[in-house]
Image (tube, rainbow, N blue to C red; front, side, top):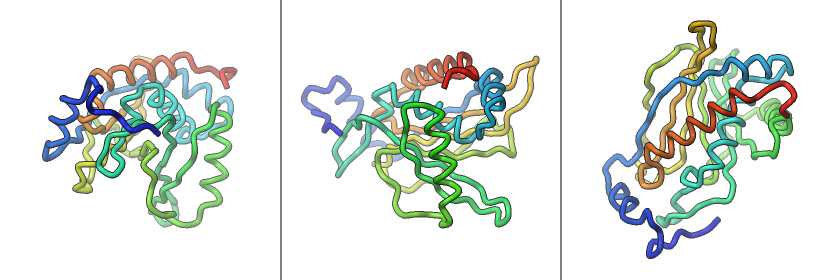
Length: 210
C-alpha cells in the first residue's frame, strides 16, 4: 500500500471535487458477452460465480484507479486487491459473505474459493478489509439497472460488482453487469477500460487457458 501524494498527483483537483460530494459513489450497468467463457468453465466443471469473480478481479486489478481507497481519510493505492462475494444458502435463502484472497491463476482461485465457501459456516466472519472488491450475484432477474444500500460513508471507495441472470440473444449468451465506484478515484473512462479488458478476457478465455 502506498500513500498518494496530493501535491504531485495529477488527479488531485478531481479527487477533491468529488471528495466533497454528498453522494460520491455512482453505478453503471451494461451487458457482457459470456458465450466463450461460459462454455469453457462448463467444460472444466467450474463454478460460474467463482470463475467470474476471479475474471473481474483480475481485470480490475490491472487498472490502478480501481485499487485506490481511503485510509484514515487519506487516499492510498494498494498493490493488489482481493475478493469478497455473497453466496446463497438455498435452504435458508440467506447469504453469507465469503472472503477469498486473489491467486495468480483462475484454477488456483476457484479451488481456494470452493474450499473457503464450503468450510465457512457463519454468515459473516467480521469486518471486511479495505483491500477488497465486493461482489454480489442477482441471478433471478436480467436487470438493466441496479442500485445499492448506502452506508452513509463518503469514504466508502470499495468497488461493488453485480451481475444478473444471463440470457440468450442472437445465438450469444449475455450477462447484465454493474459497477459501482467512488468518483474521487474512478471516472467513466476507467469503467470503459475495465469493460474492454473484461470483455476481451471473456472472449479469449478457453478451456486450456488456465
